[in-house]
Amino acid sequence: MTAVAAPVHGRTLSRGMRLALLLGPGFVLIVLPFVAAMILLGAYSLNLRDTTGSGIGFSVWQSFLSDQFNWQVIWRSVRIAALSTLITVVIAYPVAAALLRVKNRFYLIFAYVALFSPLLVSVISRSYGWLLLLSDSGFVNQMFGMVGLGPYRMVFNETGVMIAIVHVVLPYAVLPILNIMTQIPPIYREAALDLGASGWTVFRKVSLPLTLPGVIVAAEIIFALSISAFVTPSLLGGGRVLTLSRMLYDNIGLIEWGMAAVQAIVLLTTALAVLLVLERTNRSTHAARQ
Image (cartoon, helix red, strand yellow):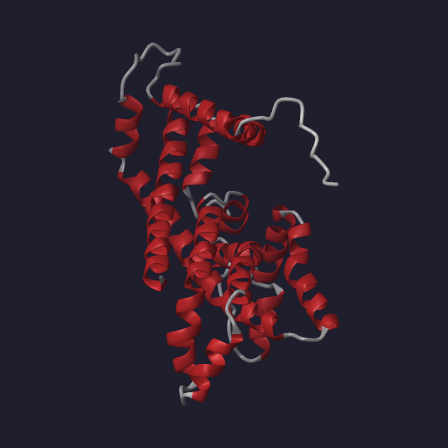
Protein backbone atom coordinates (compact mmCIF):
# COMPACT_ATOMS: atom_id res chain seq x y z
CA MET A 1 0.00 0.00 0.00
CA THR A 2 1.62 3.23 -1.13
CA ALA A 3 1.53 6.37 0.92
CA VAL A 4 0.07 9.46 -0.67
CA ALA A 5 1.79 12.72 0.16
CA ALA A 6 -0.55 15.20 1.73
CA PRO A 7 -0.98 18.44 -0.16
CA VAL A 8 0.90 21.39 1.25
CA HIS A 9 -1.47 24.19 2.10
CA GLY A 10 -0.41 27.79 2.37
CA ARG A 11 1.26 30.29 0.16
CA THR A 12 4.88 29.90 -0.92
CA LEU A 13 6.94 33.07 -1.32
CA SER A 14 8.27 33.75 -4.76
CA ARG A 15 12.02 33.80 -5.40
CA GLY A 16 11.99 37.58 -5.80
CA MET A 17 10.18 38.06 -2.52
CA ARG A 18 12.60 35.79 -0.65
CA LEU A 19 15.53 37.68 -2.17
CA ALA A 20 13.98 41.01 -1.16
CA LEU A 21 13.49 39.83 2.42
CA LEU A 22 17.10 38.66 2.61
CA LEU A 23 18.62 41.78 1.10
CA GLY A 24 16.18 44.27 2.61
CA PRO A 25 17.81 44.78 6.04
CA GLY A 26 21.29 45.15 4.56
CA PHE A 27 19.98 47.55 1.91
CA VAL A 28 18.28 49.72 4.52
CA LEU A 29 21.28 49.77 6.87
CA ILE A 30 24.05 50.20 4.31
CA VAL A 31 22.89 51.39 0.90
CA LEU A 32 20.29 53.98 1.90
CA PRO A 33 22.52 55.84 4.42
CA PHE A 34 25.35 55.85 1.88
CA VAL A 35 23.13 57.26 -0.87
CA ALA A 36 21.69 59.86 1.52
CA ALA A 37 25.18 60.90 2.62
CA MET A 38 26.35 61.24 -1.00
CA ILE A 39 23.32 63.40 -1.82
CA LEU A 40 24.12 65.67 1.13
CA LEU A 41 27.78 65.87 0.15
CA GLY A 42 26.80 66.82 -3.39
CA ALA A 43 24.43 69.47 -2.07
CA TYR A 44 27.07 71.02 0.19
CA SER A 45 29.73 70.92 -2.55
CA LEU A 46 27.42 72.87 -4.89
CA ASN A 47 26.42 75.39 -2.21
CA LEU A 48 22.83 74.14 -2.24
CA ARG A 49 22.80 74.43 1.56
CA ASP A 50 24.92 77.56 1.71
CA THR A 51 23.81 80.35 4.05
CA THR A 52 26.49 82.92 3.17
CA GLY A 53 24.75 84.10 0.06
CA SER A 54 27.46 83.02 -2.40
CA GLY A 55 24.87 81.16 -4.43
CA ILE A 56 24.60 77.76 -6.09
CA GLY A 57 27.48 76.79 -8.34
CA PHE A 58 30.89 75.21 -8.63
CA SER A 59 32.77 77.91 -6.73
CA VAL A 60 33.92 75.49 -4.02
CA TRP A 61 35.07 72.96 -6.59
CA GLN A 62 36.92 75.67 -8.49
CA SER A 63 38.59 76.88 -5.32
CA PHE A 64 39.73 73.37 -4.41
CA LEU A 65 40.90 72.21 -7.84
CA SER A 66 42.69 75.46 -8.71
CA ASP A 67 44.90 75.30 -5.60
CA GLN A 68 48.17 73.50 -6.32
CA PHE A 69 48.60 72.72 -2.63
CA ASN A 70 45.49 70.54 -2.67
CA TRP A 71 46.91 68.49 -5.54
CA GLN A 72 50.10 67.97 -3.55
CA VAL A 73 48.04 66.69 -0.61
CA ILE A 74 46.11 64.32 -2.89
CA TRP A 75 49.35 62.99 -4.36
CA ARG A 76 50.88 62.55 -0.87
CA SER A 77 47.80 60.66 0.30
CA VAL A 78 47.90 58.32 -2.72
CA ARG A 79 51.66 57.82 -2.40
CA ILE A 80 51.51 56.93 1.29
CA ALA A 81 48.59 54.55 0.69
CA ALA A 82 50.27 52.92 -2.33
CA LEU A 83 53.63 52.42 -0.57
CA SER A 84 51.92 51.14 2.58
CA THR A 85 49.93 48.70 0.47
CA LEU A 86 53.03 47.45 -1.33
CA ILE A 87 55.03 47.00 1.88
CA THR A 88 52.12 45.32 3.64
CA VAL A 89 51.52 42.82 0.84
CA VAL A 90 55.24 42.00 0.61
CA ILE A 91 55.29 41.25 4.35
CA ALA A 92 51.89 39.50 4.44
CA TYR A 93 52.68 37.00 1.68
CA PRO A 94 55.51 35.14 3.45
CA VAL A 95 53.61 35.39 6.75
CA ALA A 96 50.61 33.65 5.17
CA ALA A 97 52.88 31.04 3.58
CA ALA A 98 54.54 30.37 6.94
CA LEU A 99 51.18 30.00 8.70
CA LEU A 100 50.14 27.49 6.07
CA ARG A 101 53.17 25.33 6.86
CA VAL A 102 52.79 25.32 10.64
CA LYS A 103 51.55 21.86 11.65
CA ASN A 104 51.86 22.06 15.43
CA ARG A 105 48.50 23.20 16.81
CA PHE A 106 50.03 25.06 19.77
CA TYR A 107 52.43 27.04 17.58
CA LEU A 108 49.66 27.78 15.09
CA ILE A 109 47.37 29.18 17.79
CA PHE A 110 50.24 31.24 19.18
CA ALA A 111 50.99 32.63 15.71
CA TYR A 112 47.35 33.59 15.12
CA VAL A 113 47.11 35.27 18.53
CA ALA A 114 50.34 37.20 17.93
CA LEU A 115 49.16 38.32 14.49
CA PHE A 116 45.56 39.26 15.24
CA SER A 117 45.66 40.33 18.90
CA PRO A 118 46.65 43.93 17.96
CA LEU A 119 43.19 44.24 16.40
CA LEU A 120 41.81 44.18 19.95
CA VAL A 121 43.72 47.37 20.76
CA SER A 122 42.46 50.74 19.55
CA VAL A 123 44.25 52.45 16.68
CA ILE A 124 45.00 55.42 18.94
CA SER A 125 46.84 53.23 21.45
CA ARG A 126 48.85 51.50 18.75
CA SER A 127 49.76 54.80 17.11
CA TYR A 128 50.91 56.26 20.44
CA GLY A 129 52.94 53.10 20.99
CA TRP A 130 54.72 53.55 17.67
CA LEU A 131 55.25 57.23 18.49
CA LEU A 132 57.18 56.19 21.59
CA LEU A 133 59.08 53.40 19.84
CA LEU A 134 60.17 55.49 16.85
CA SER A 135 60.99 58.75 18.64
CA ASP A 136 64.54 60.11 18.60
CA SER A 137 65.24 58.59 22.02
CA GLY A 138 62.87 55.65 21.58
CA PHE A 139 63.55 51.93 21.68
CA VAL A 140 64.26 51.58 17.94
CA ASN A 141 66.88 54.35 17.88
CA GLN A 142 68.41 52.96 21.06
CA MET A 143 68.86 49.60 19.30
CA PHE A 144 70.44 51.36 16.36
CA GLY A 145 72.75 53.23 18.73
CA MET A 146 73.98 49.97 20.25
CA VAL A 147 75.42 48.97 16.87
CA GLY A 148 76.76 52.42 16.07
CA LEU A 149 73.92 53.62 13.85
CA GLY A 150 71.48 56.49 14.04
CA PRO A 151 69.70 58.18 15.51
CA TYR A 152 67.24 58.35 12.64
CA ARG A 153 64.30 60.66 12.32
CA MET A 154 61.29 58.32 12.12
CA VAL A 155 58.46 60.39 13.58
CA PHE A 156 56.68 63.45 12.23
CA ASN A 157 57.42 62.29 8.70
CA GLU A 158 56.07 59.83 6.14
CA THR A 159 58.39 57.04 7.32
CA GLY A 160 56.79 56.76 10.73
CA VAL A 161 53.31 57.11 9.26
CA MET A 162 53.85 54.19 6.86
CA ILE A 163 55.44 51.98 9.53
CA ALA A 164 52.44 52.47 11.81
CA ILE A 165 49.92 51.99 8.99
CA VAL A 166 51.57 48.73 7.93
CA HIS A 167 51.35 47.44 11.51
CA VAL A 168 47.68 48.41 11.76
CA VAL A 169 46.54 46.86 8.47
CA LEU A 170 48.83 43.80 8.24
CA PRO A 171 46.26 41.28 9.61
CA TYR A 172 43.74 42.40 6.98
CA ALA A 173 46.24 41.46 4.26
CA VAL A 174 47.20 38.08 5.68
CA LEU A 175 43.65 36.72 5.74
CA PRO A 176 42.77 36.90 2.00
CA ILE A 177 46.22 35.67 0.98
CA LEU A 178 46.07 32.78 3.43
CA ASN A 179 42.56 31.94 2.23
CA ILE A 180 43.63 31.64 -1.42
CA MET A 181 46.70 29.63 -0.44
CA THR A 182 44.58 27.03 1.33
CA GLN A 183 42.60 26.49 -1.90
CA ILE A 184 45.67 25.51 -3.96
CA PRO A 185 46.36 21.75 -3.98
CA PRO A 186 49.93 21.00 -2.79
CA ILE A 187 50.29 18.58 -5.70
CA TYR A 188 50.86 21.53 -8.08
CA ARG A 189 54.02 22.58 -6.28
CA GLU A 190 55.16 19.00 -5.82
CA ALA A 191 54.69 18.26 -9.53
CA ALA A 192 56.78 21.31 -10.47
CA LEU A 193 59.56 20.24 -8.12
CA ASP A 194 59.47 16.69 -9.50
CA LEU A 195 59.92 18.11 -13.00
CA GLY A 196 63.15 19.78 -11.90
CA ALA A 197 61.97 23.34 -11.26
CA SER A 198 63.86 25.33 -8.65
CA GLY A 199 62.16 26.88 -5.65
CA TRP A 200 62.25 30.34 -7.23
CA THR A 201 60.80 29.01 -10.47
CA VAL A 202 58.00 27.24 -8.60
CA PHE A 203 57.16 30.47 -6.78
CA ARG A 204 57.31 32.63 -9.91
CA LYS A 205 55.42 30.34 -12.29
CA VAL A 206 53.16 28.29 -10.02
CA SER A 207 52.58 29.73 -6.54
CA LEU A 208 52.42 33.45 -7.33
CA PRO A 209 50.08 33.22 -10.38
CA LEU A 210 47.68 30.97 -8.46
CA THR A 211 47.65 33.20 -5.38
CA LEU A 212 47.55 36.49 -7.30
CA PRO A 213 43.75 36.95 -6.84
CA GLY A 214 44.21 36.83 -3.06
CA VAL A 215 47.10 39.29 -3.29
CA ILE A 216 44.97 41.72 -5.31
CA VAL A 217 42.06 41.43 -2.85
CA ALA A 218 44.49 42.13 0.00
CA ALA A 219 45.82 45.16 -1.89
CA GLU A 220 42.28 46.47 -2.37
CA ILE A 221 41.51 46.20 1.33
CA ILE A 222 44.80 47.73 2.44
CA PHE A 223 44.67 50.63 0.00
CA ALA A 224 41.12 51.51 1.05
CA LEU A 225 42.13 51.46 4.73
CA SER A 226 45.39 53.34 4.16
CA ILE A 227 44.11 56.22 2.04
CA SER A 228 41.29 56.89 4.49
CA ALA A 229 43.46 56.59 7.62
CA PHE A 230 43.19 59.60 9.90
CA VAL A 231 44.45 58.81 13.41
CA THR A 232 47.80 57.31 12.41
CA PRO A 233 48.89 60.10 10.02
CA SER A 234 47.74 62.71 12.55
CA LEU A 235 49.73 61.26 15.46
CA LEU A 236 52.82 59.94 13.68
CA GLY A 237 52.86 62.86 11.25
CA GLY A 238 52.60 65.45 14.00
CA GLY A 239 50.86 67.90 11.68
CA ARG A 240 53.73 67.77 9.17
CA VAL A 241 52.27 64.96 7.07
CA LEU A 242 49.06 66.47 5.76
CA THR A 243 46.75 63.99 4.09
CA LEU A 244 43.35 64.43 2.49
CA SER A 245 41.57 62.82 5.43
CA ARG A 246 43.28 65.25 7.82
CA MET A 247 42.31 68.24 5.66
CA LEU A 248 38.74 66.96 5.63
CA TYR A 249 38.72 66.73 9.42
CA ASP A 250 40.16 70.22 9.80
CA ASN A 251 37.53 71.76 7.52
CA ILE A 252 34.74 70.04 9.45
CA GLY A 253 36.15 71.58 12.62
CA LEU A 254 36.20 74.99 10.92
CA ILE A 255 32.55 74.54 9.79
CA GLU A 256 33.67 74.74 6.16
CA TRP A 257 30.97 72.33 5.03
CA GLY A 258 31.33 73.01 1.31
CA MET A 259 35.09 72.44 1.18
CA ALA A 260 34.81 69.42 3.46
CA ALA A 261 32.18 67.92 1.15
CA VAL A 262 34.39 68.45 -1.91
CA GLN A 263 37.37 66.82 -0.16
CA ALA A 264 35.23 63.88 0.93
CA ILE A 265 34.02 63.33 -2.63
CA VAL A 266 37.58 63.60 -4.00
CA LEU A 267 38.84 61.13 -1.38
CA LEU A 268 36.08 58.65 -2.19
CA THR A 269 36.54 59.06 -5.95
CA THR A 270 40.31 58.58 -5.73
CA ALA A 271 39.94 55.42 -3.65
CA LEU A 272 37.25 54.01 -5.96
CA ALA A 273 39.35 54.74 -9.05
CA VAL A 274 42.33 52.78 -7.69
CA LEU A 275 40.07 49.97 -6.47
CA LEU A 276 38.45 49.80 -9.91
CA VAL A 277 41.86 49.36 -11.54
CA LEU A 278 42.77 46.62 -9.07
CA GLU A 279 39.43 44.88 -9.60
CA ARG A 280 39.86 44.96 -13.38
CA THR A 281 43.31 43.44 -12.89
CA ASN A 282 41.79 40.77 -10.66
CA ARG A 283 39.18 39.90 -13.29
CA SER A 284 41.87 39.71 -15.98
CA THR A 285 43.79 37.33 -13.75
CA HIS A 286 40.73 35.09 -13.34
CA ALA A 287 40.12 35.13 -17.09
CA ALA A 288 43.72 34.19 -17.80
CA ARG A 289 43.53 31.28 -15.34
CA GLN A 290 40.39 29.96 -17.00
